[in-house]
Structures are given as structure tokens and as C-alpha cells.
Length: 427
Image 1 (cartoon, one colour):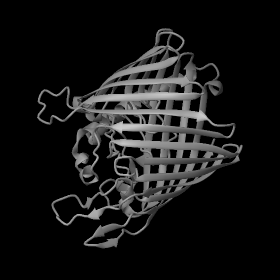
Image 2 (cartoon, helix red, strand yellow; image 1 turned 60 degrees about the horizontal axis):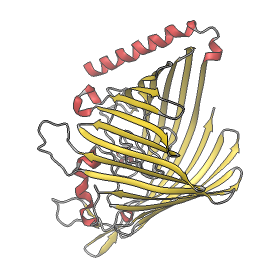
Image 3 (cartoon, one colour; image 1 turned 90 degrees about the vertical axis):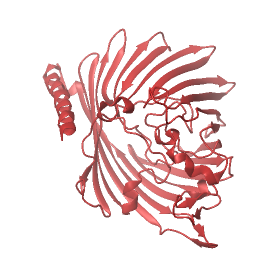
Image 4 (cartoon, one colour; image 1 turned 135 degrees about the vertical axis):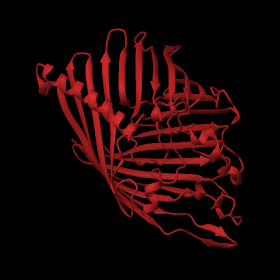
């Protein structure tokens, strides 16, 4: 109760600042706006068969319908000062098991970088069992922006993301998306204070403090990031301490001929800032390197290779990784060491793009095929359909009860197939 009360006091204080600022604006309508969207995702899940004592079986198919309404309010009472608040509410109809796994079994389990929060579940109430319907809320943005000649300051719940890679961003460990996340339009907000200092036309310093649950040092993060443009190359370097781990990252992006090139890498030393490193783990390194190219006026393609020393080459050892800090707190969720990702966007008509992606685990030979279509019905109205289909050896059910429930024989052969449709309206 004390934590919730403290969090409400902060919200009330920031809300009071917002309210006091409104009449200060000389023309309220010119400085205040409300935008938003409604989204519907209808999803069908088909689970892979698993083998047990020579026989194949599978879990029943599952479905889900997610309706999401989001409102964003922007206020700029004076030049250089602005406020943003975004709140969304989601009504979900789905199998009870799916309420426990919003990422549809991608294994991406992110630590929460929020000091406190509203109760995410409106119905049924926390503590009550949930069947097939749930109503959820999310206060996703609540921050102030102060722009001066020396720096821009952002304080409150805001999005924080960086990295030039298309598939996996090794330096982005705060709130990344899994590859099969259906709604990637906006990053989840985190509680932070961020300062961006311009050093020139394309150079800047970016530093910030990100608050974790209950403001505990074990849950917080801070970063120092510099970006320069030299030798026709965007060069970014970052040093980050997150949950007592150290990350050192480098990101390069430039043009090579008519193609775009990027190299994003991160070295992580787990538990570097703990006094007692009893949980000492091996350091790990991740990198993504790729090229993209406009093949013609209608076709864009890219290819990217990803390496992760935190992964394994032997599928039978994949699930051992779930207890490591890389997977619990470092935003690592792919089990293998080597991946090749290829994709293209083909403009069938000016209003109908087709997107195709192949994600190949080079360690075990499994892959994900992801085709999708989108159609712009009218201004700000879109419909889409697509799928994520896994190909690879299916898992086996473990015989010994003291082990994990499944034994992997490949990574993507253990993923459920996902078929989805979406409907989006922006206003």
C-alpha cells in the first residue's frame, strides 16, 4: 500500500504541474492535442507436436483477440517545454494460458524498469482467477521535455531505444521487441531522466538514469552514450550499467555504394558491480552485421547475421540458458549462437506492401518463415494479415520429472505457428 500511495503522489504532483500550465498558454487549442488509435489483433496459435516414447502428440490449438485503444495527449504551454501523457486500455479474449505469456512463447522476459505503476489488470481484479476475458490498462507515457540551447531534458515515463540493426539490437537491453511481437509501433515506456546534449549538426552526448522497481540499486540502470559522424559513418558508443551488469557497445552505420551497412555489437560482463560475485557468470558478446538495398522502385531487401556467445550450439542444452542473467535480465532470448535473417518488402500496389522474412538458426538448422500483407483501406485505416511458421525438429517430452518438461531438438521447431490479422484506425 505504501508503494502504491507514493506512486500516486508523484502522478498527482506531475498532473498538477500539467494543470497549472494549461491556462498559461496564450492559445490553448494551438498548444494542446489529442491523438490515438484503435487496434484489433486476431490470432490463431497452432502448437508443434512433441514426441514421447515414440508417439507424437500436441497441445490443443488456441486463439486470441486483443482490442487496444490508446490516447495520447500533448501540451506545449511555452516554447521549449512540453508534456506528453499516453494511456491505453486493452480488452483481451483468449485462452487463460496466454494471459501468462504476452510474447507468445518467444522466451523474451524483460525486467520492469518502472519505479511503480498502476495495477495493470482492471478485470478481473488482482488475486481473482482469470478465465477467457481480461481488461488491462497501461499508463505508458507520462513525461516532461525541457529544451534549451545547451541540452534537451526528458523526465518521466518515456521510450528509450537505440541501435541500427534490423533484427536483433545487441545494445538495446531496456525494452526491446521479440521478433514475433505483433505490435511494434511503440516501445514500452520506462521511468527515467535523460539528457541529450548536441555537440554539432549530427553529434551528441546522451546520458540517463533509468529507474527500476522500488528504486532499488539492483533494479536500476544508467547509461552514457556518444554519437559522432566521421569518415561518412555514424558512430555510436555506449557504456551502460544495468541491474549491476556492465555493457559496452559500439554501433556503426554507413552507406557502401548504393547499399546501407550496419554493425552493432555489445560486450556484457554480468554482475560486474556486485560486491559479492558469488553468481559469477562468463562474459558474453553479441553482434549484428548487415546490408540493405533498394533493388528497384518497388523492392527493398536486407540481410543480417547475428552472433551471440550467450547461446548454445547443442539444442538439448537450450533450456539451461533460462537461468542465466543474459536471459533473465539481458534481453537475450534466442538460444543459438549463429543466425541469418533475410527479408524483403515488395510494393504490390502503392497501398499494398508485401513483407517476407526468413530467420534461420544456423546452429541447429531450424527457421521461421514470416509472410505478411497490409492494405491501406482509407486514410489512417489499415488491415493486415500474416504468419510466423516454424520449421525444424520438434521437441520431446522429458521422461525424468525432475528435469524441464521438454527437451529441444531445434529452436524454431518448438515455437507455435502464429497466424494473425489486424485492423488499425488512427485519429
